[in-house]
Image (cartoon, rainbow, N blue to C red):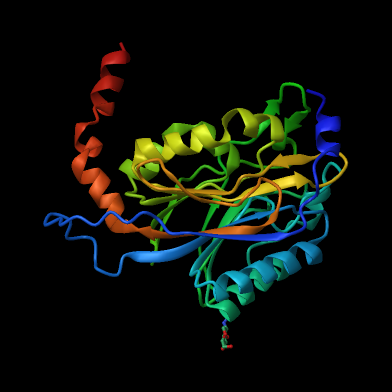
Length: 319
Ligand SMILES: *[C@@H]1O[C@H](CO)[C@@H](O)[C@H](O)[C@H]1NC(C)=O
């Protein structure tokens, strides 16, 4: 399909959509799950937006959505990759890159503090190891405005997208090399970014080595790859790790060259989609109540953690 003509037929995101979906709550008497306390339910939100090449405009959108989410009872709001800036020219984002204690992130810390909201900010342009490279960093801020954790994207998007353009993220971005999980009132979080989604081993590591319960996948999938693979990959990661998955997505046309697939989504540990916006383009957020006792229920009934034979499979195949 001609991308240009398809794009032209799409309305650009305007309306704010708010969907409230209550996660199906599985409550079973579970004498064995002592790690789960009674207050293990929490309301979380996933943002969909169309970032542009303007730091102030994107901040205004993020700020508005955070306040609306707070009013809707959300305690943890997840933003997509490149939430704060998306460049239209090569090298533009390296120029605006800052450290995590710079003024751009400081503003988001104040926003979290003012709204008493935990924020997942995926895909921030963090100042890199030299002037021509940045890191693509997922930043977790707590409800008092402190940076709790940060993860530098490991898998860079160097891909010739069929029928679209050639992306070479590594030209201006340095890859991270460390898997990051962090504790929060919403469970143990696994931090990843976008293209990481295609590499299941990082999620296996988050689940089986770091005991993650909720996987975060802030993204800016292309329209072509999103249409083909977005939902199926996310649901697969949720099912095979028995984790909640929260995947915030960039949506629609950012500039002349770049368009994102959209479809921000929250998935439960059984692989069921429990929240998404009414369409793939609007700016807004969807809400779900996540319940960590559901994670334990799925894991107790299907104990893949004890049944997996990864080490012996590796051993048997390395002759
Ligand atoms: C958070 O807000 C409080 C009250 O307004 C203020 O005293 C504190 O310094 C703020 N913390 C951060 C990290 O901004």
